[in-house]
Image: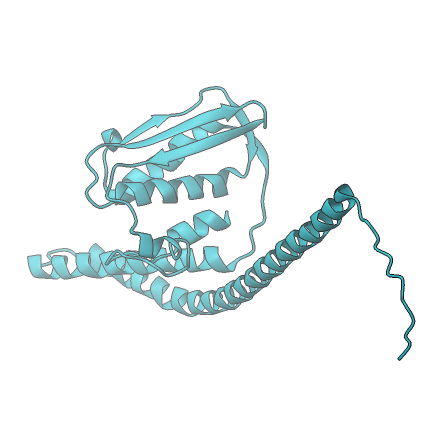
Length: 241
């Protein structure tokens, strides 16, 4: 049986070309992985924004409904306190009602902070003045003394900021540090100028027990708290600001 003989030609590919092709494939694969990660991150952020938007609408509705009866409670408290010759037990009951009404008013204010849009009002302000005002607000609310916070503010340094919102964020963080479990030393608050970025970095630290690993991912979620009297809104508001 006769058959044709076939000449088989072999093409030699230079090693450098083969390496370049392999590198291109690897680079394409890396970019694909990065794009997939970016898409997943964008999807997660979109879900979170939608959840927060729904939460904001709910918070605004609740705050609106609660604010009116809260005003009535404070009016009634004022009228009762103006009456003289109250017995001791009645004064104690009034103090309890006032304490709980104050807690409720704080919750309403925080709900509104979560719900309302942040309209930034920028102005040039001394950073030291903003920090000291925030610390004073936090210590008064916590019933703490001046020696409970070591404040190292930068005197004379001017920053462009929304003084009210920045002060609120700092005050929330200081309050959180003051209430840290097992805290033994004063809360430390410092400001560091970063000339390369033309920024001021604020640092707030305490020596309390800290946050457990299982709770860290939920730390800034609205209404998440590990404290019996906490609302779980302070850190969420600070992060939003």
